[in-house]
Amino acid sequence: MAHLNFAREVLFMPRPIQAHIDLSALEHNLQVARRATAARIMAVIKASAYGHGLLRAAGALRAADGFALLDINEAAYLREAGFRQTILLLEGFFSTDDLALAAEYDLACVIHNPQQVAMLDAYPRRGNLQVWIKANSGMNRLGFPPQDIPAVLEKIKAHPAVRDITLMTHFASADEADGVVAQLEVFNALDTPCRMARSLANSAALLRYPATHADWVRPGIMLYGASPFAEISAQQLGLKPVMTLQSEIISVRELKAGERVGYGGTFCAESPMRIGTVACGYADGYPRHAPTGTPVLVAGRRTRTLGRVSMDMLSVDLSSLPDAIAGSGVTLWGSGLPVEEVARAAGTISYELLCALAPRVHMAGFSQSA
Ligand SMILES: *Cc1c(COP(=O)(O)O)cnc(C)c1O
Image (cartoon, rainbow, N blue to C red):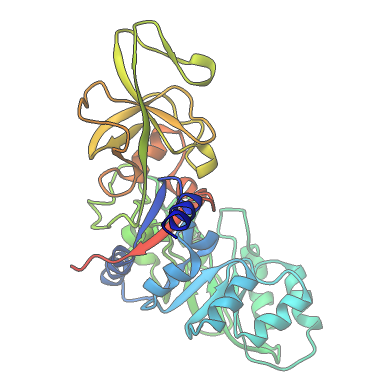
């Protein structure tokens, strides 16, 4: 019997890598958004809530006024799970079937192109659809040209299936010095046949440009505790990191001067040093292009990665950490090491690292009592 239990334990022993999701930090960051605006808050939970797990994140963000995402199946799933808020499909529907499903589940739909208007035209039923008309105010990704907006609005307003229209746009550079001014001007000049709700702001605009708040703000990254700005940290914004990616040292060795580390031997020891191998690689979502020197915490102390990141492992410098041994805890990002710093070192942004967390990494939600 004891033997059987032992065997089972071995069979189910996971690799030591885990993503810890701090649900109280999600709630806290939503409160930070609340305090910054009087507008209704549409929590953006696309890409499985930026890699944090859809239902887990939506549950912690249940005080939001709405949820925005892309996948209609996920949206229907949220509705089935009991969420009563507005649920917005950020790219709208892709087919007439989607449209029928959106109506059935009371999903608000972005309409951003003439093909969607045509699908709506062909939609036979009366109904209760909430529609968000997207204007292109300068990002040139999605949305109708400003001059087309009045005609689109007139047409949609007259449609018997449409209950309610919100006018929206999206900023290209709310996080940068050139900001929102030009796009805000275009959006504010739009000609609408009657007063309707408006939505413009992502996290950066919410935090920096109150003039963009209007009726609905659409924060994403800030809810997950990362700063949308290069020059202001999440901590300075009062945000708490939600995801902490942790693993362990699984091997320790001494290098002589001239010895190399990892594929391609891109790192060469200049003098004798001590290094550790961490159970985390690019197949876990750690960026392969993170160079030597990318920050990492071992037993809570800051050190650096060495050489190339492999599929399942990476190497770290333990020369200044004589106490670090096989089994020492490693933080790849999160609590104590902002994901933005790791992203910057790897030449990318926090969004990409969070979204790229691999499904094979076990995630566990927890709450810190205040
Ligand atoms: C992703 C997204 C957001 C959220 O952006 P953040 O920078 O993460 O706050 C808001 N609106 C739209 C249309 C989006 O696609």
